Image (cartoon, rainbow, N blue to C red; front, top):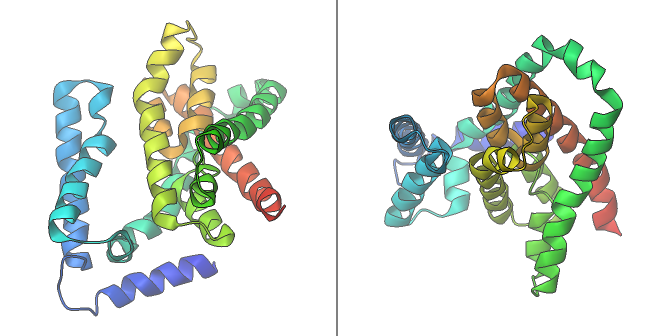
Length: 244
């Protein structure tokens, strides 16, 4: 609640500033237009490589670079969009509710897969970064790579990680999972939509869940379940391990 009130305060205060490159009246239309163009390109091309998040992110990145806008300014100017992240994640529970009977049938195998996936996904990334000489800042950001943005940013603030780096790692993880995840699972001859959705949800959080919903409602339901449970488990365990 305190985090929500802080973001609401920042978003409201940003409107009181003079119109500039990081003003909400500039950034909000920029985000909407970039996503619209990215979505048009994605539908026209039909290739997952041009996922709308990819296209929109590139367009926004170019615009911010040309305007000289930093990430903290962008985050503050996009405050109202950040406030919508929470409700949008909650809305993903709709397909889960519609398929709740099927979800209950796969209870214990799902819990085992969740536990293994939620631990291994960040652990492997952290070990690779550690072997390559990654700094503590990078390691902290990588620990939240497989949870959705609102949870990752809250954890980053609690652990003292850099939020801009955390957001970038989370977005990159989601994009890679959404673009390549279904194709890799298909190549491995994994076609059960329950398994596909759960694997995508654990590894690619909300961005992957949107991709899973394009496959089927059942796939999206299991992805939303995995994303929510993985985020909750990470939020409970990660602060304990980071304190050690």
